[in-house]
Amino acid sequence: MKALYIVGIVLSFIFLFVIGFFIAEVESARYMSYYDYSDPYSYNYGYSSYTNYGEDETLLGGIVSFFFFSFFILAGILGLIKTKTKTNKVLSIIGLSLSGIFFFWNILVMVDPGALSYDEVGGGYIFYSLVMLAFMIVGLVQAVRYAKRLSVSTAPVTEDILDS
Image 1 (tube, helix red, strand yellow):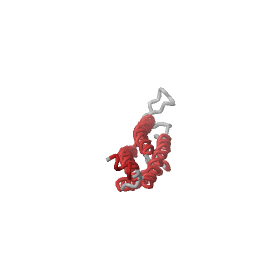
Image 2 (cartoon, rainbow, N blue to C red):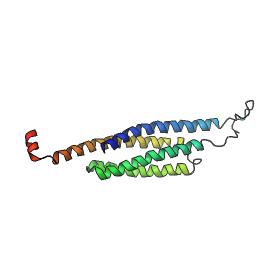
Image 3 (cartoon, rainbow, N blue to C red):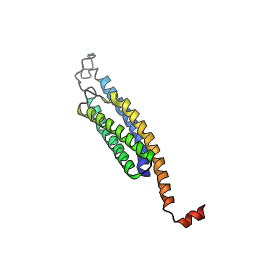
Image 4 (tube, rainbow, N blue to C red):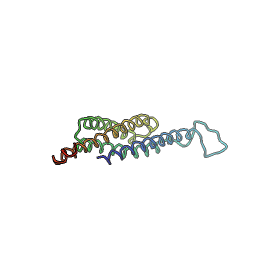
């Protein structure tokens, strides 16, 4: 579990950069859609033949985010099963609930990228990534404490007397 939480911490930071990248890509695609570059001597502002408006970038961002959400759901389930502290159980349940909400929100983004663009939902994804970073850090601390408690309780009685 400790390794899973460490990977979760690293993926939370990576997810923050991925979110920033896709927000910038979608905003850039929207900005570029206002200009028609098929004719360099034409200044057709607002009448571009490019009608995508960042839908491809939004779909790609949704697909990439899908894998991050799937990992955090898996980490929450495993944290709920493997680590038996009350704090970790509560945080795993809250994390699973939050992950489920954002997972379905991400599915909505992927189903119709023209209605919900990635730069519109990116702020929520940043919030989610920061919350999951905090949960992964607390989960790591709880997993270490749980492992220490297990190692102490399974030690023979003679070792406990010698160590005290």
